[in-house]
Length: 335
Figure (cartoon, rainbow, N blue to C red):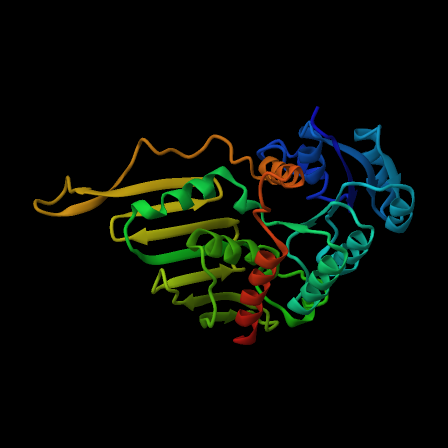
């Protein structure tokens, strides 16, 4: 009989709980719903300082205990898995506390911390207590991004990578350093992480251009340009001037192109052109379709279970999460 792993959740806000009720999102879309959906996991406790959140979460999880103090939760429970899903400015404090409680695994919501100094403290504590940390950079678990990665070898030599994030949130504001309330760290961490995931190598030493600041001196737009061993032209563009949210990566090779993003998946091959004699064009490959479900949250939780079973490694680690923070800090240093 397979072992059941117990789990506790610290922080019961959007990503931890309420996004699980968003009818437009692919479900499960929260830590709570993803943990509940896995038959190998039993949620035994949840913690939040907001009494209203606690009550609503308790009603949805009647078999679990609730706490307003994480310290008390750890005193009364010994969960195998602790999920830390608090605001960015509390990541380090709650991650360190979770690690010191010595569960078998900590699942830490992205970004790892507000900065690399805080991330280093988490790493030291993780190694000291022998507690591994899985970072929820969700696209590393998603079927569509893994399909894109598997197709990289079919598009020839990589010529360009164009990664773009668009939203209405300020890209960077020094005054928000203490809270992390800016898109460079909030969603930009996903963008730079998935570029490194797809390429299978780090990006560093950016040339930052296209900087646009608003009347409050908040950075609203930028592009960071890189050169790697696999690709001579990688561009990461982030805009906080848009009235829509977009997330897309376009990889162009000598033989084809891959487009992957939120609700987007297209794969093109070099074919004899239908428009011009003795020319070749990119043609959509109809046999390769956008997956109906990405399973981004479900696969993350399954990776945790498989890791605890000893049958695979973690797919998103404290190291890969910290690597993303290094990239973001290099960009900030150029602003």
